[in-house]
Length: 73
Image 1 (cartoon, rainbow, N blue to C red):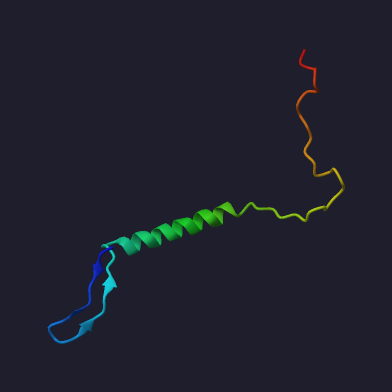
Image 2 (image 1 turned 45 degrees about the vertical axis):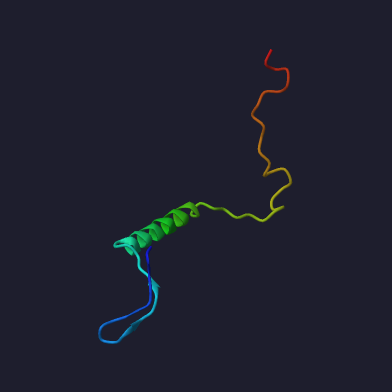
């Protein structure tokens, strides 16, 4: 992104120093932001929030599906 220095036009108009974006850069940035918002929105659709300690004790604990120790012989 080139930096344009302050200058005066032929008609006497003062132009402040500014940055100039490359052609198409604003469109690409806008597209990137939209894609990012879609990804974040789609990723948060399946979030389930539960209170800690809700339900019966032990009911929320995962069950162990591995064989007992020594059972592989």
